[in-house]
Image 1 (cartoon, rainbow, N blue to C red):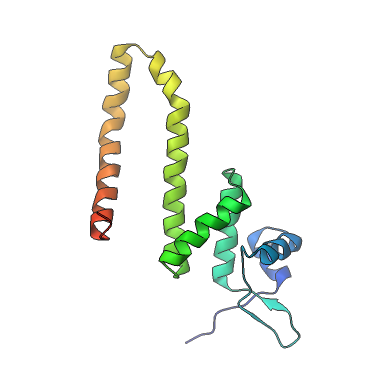
Image 2 (image 1 turned 180 degrees about the vertical axis):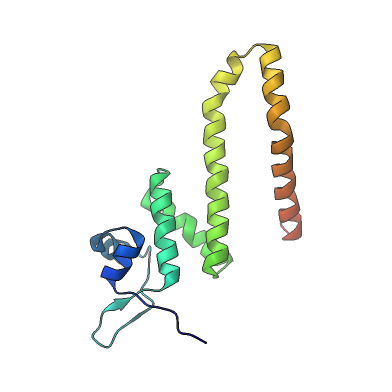
Length: 146
């Protein structure tokens, strides 16, 4: 079995597209954790950390505070220590929250529509919305949430 690559801060910085200073800050706040230390005491980070960094940066773009990001990532990490599963769950939660924000932004516009226009809009979105809700319900039932 091949060993996982480990990155020093400079390498991780280039791969993630963030500054080394940002990585230092995230490490000091506990948002990321080094995998190990080298013989020369350099902090070494794994591919999991790289994925986590990308997720953090995406959440920052979506206007989440660092405290919200840490809470969100940590809560999914407790459920599934597998970084890939945790990443998928976080992404799903973020998409759902983004959709909620977009729906709230659209409410005033939808309220301005004439009844016939509103009916056409709902005819177009109801099937896909229903399919999404059904998929979530199946997932939740399968997972024993319900």
